[in-house]
Image (cartoon, rainbow, N blue to C red; front, side):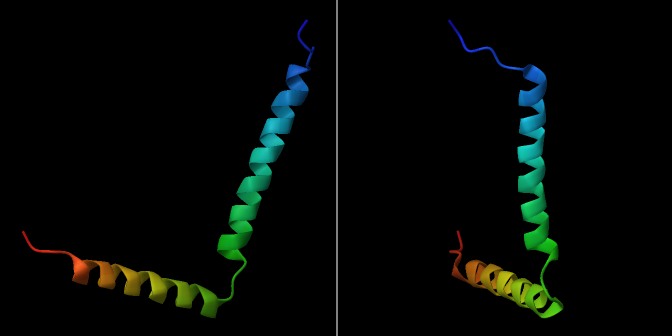
Length: 58
């Protein structure tokens, strides 16, 4: 026989887990100093420029 589960508890547990992952992502995105944000932006731009510079012309 299958194990009986409470669907309401399962739904609440799933949403709670989703909320925790969303909160962790928000902490990572918004919990940084201004200097860290600027450094990440500059690194992203540098990587994009380097990638564009390495593309071969057709």
